[in-house]
Image (cartoon, rainbow, N blue to C red; front, side, top):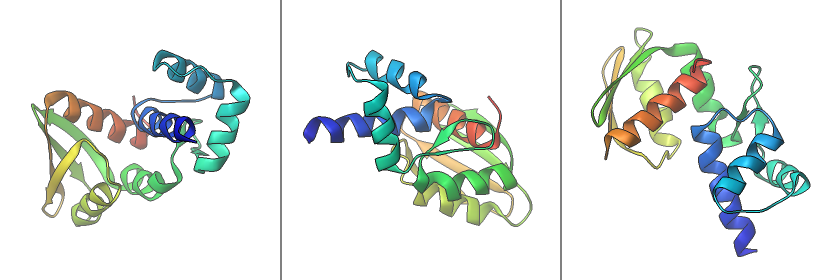
Length: 143
């Protein structure tokens, strides 16, 4: 049981950070993280975790579908400045996008501040900011 929970935590991090298109990709990422499992095991994990495939063909966590929809429809750009991100959105939509980012519980985000069309996202490190920027670009259908 503990091994399954730990493996699914790794899957959650990988799916949020990488563009995973196939179960084989996920098996390879798990192997790189030290988990030896079969495609059948990954298939069960995908079902159990409620992963979905976006129209672009990449997996997303069910709990991130709202965030993905908000980002894909409303975010126009993202720029990293050291440990911070400047996220531009359609006029009037930044508070909703910021709330979705905060609500997703992404572990690398300390918090965000939203204006009318701009969001300042604060992270602990430049690497964390880069990871969140990659996630946002993935959800925008870029990268």
